[in-house]
Image (cartoon, helix red, strand yellow):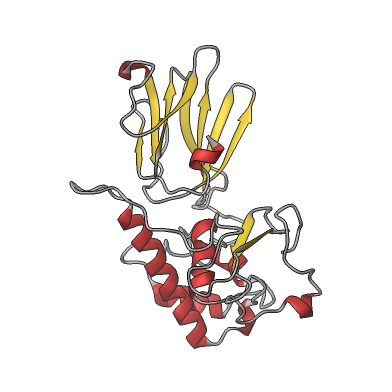
Length: 268
């Protein structure tokens, strides 16, 4: 399931017994955790699908169009991503929850606008980023801070950094107002276009390709370099980027950070 689903956008989700919100089409599965007979799928925006399989529950993987080995009436959840369909049968519990309660932060103040919404106040996001309380914070970490904006997630933060040619070591305090305006507009455009593309139509159900996320070791489609990956010290999540063309605002030498390398290293 990790090979089939991680790093892939959700193109279809169904669950007749789901407790909690359904994952939004276009979001990317970032992690799958298994603890005994409990299996969790975690999307990049922090939503978790928890399935307690107990004795009779099971997950199956199929190719689209394959005949299932269990009847439709036993289906508890179905997730389709690219060339695979994952189906959960006979689970005792199927629920979703968020790893962080982003709607309430009593100790941190209000939360920012949801940038995935068409009527999101982008001007407010720009001003919040320009006034960010820690100018030394990395841009990627600021994009994931719900005090400034919500809805982007780790996957699309990497895509936005790539689109703006920003280094993973870029600091929010180094960006001019014009840079921040471009960053916010790009974030809204990238996220909304990917979410919209994942919504099925009568003619197709296709995801837009990701440029860097999940493509470590592959060629950058913009410059021909090799996409690299490191692990963030702040949240432990993987950060993907192209060292050849994402060089703007590179603070690596000032941070005395080792050169890029394997995912197991805490480079960021």
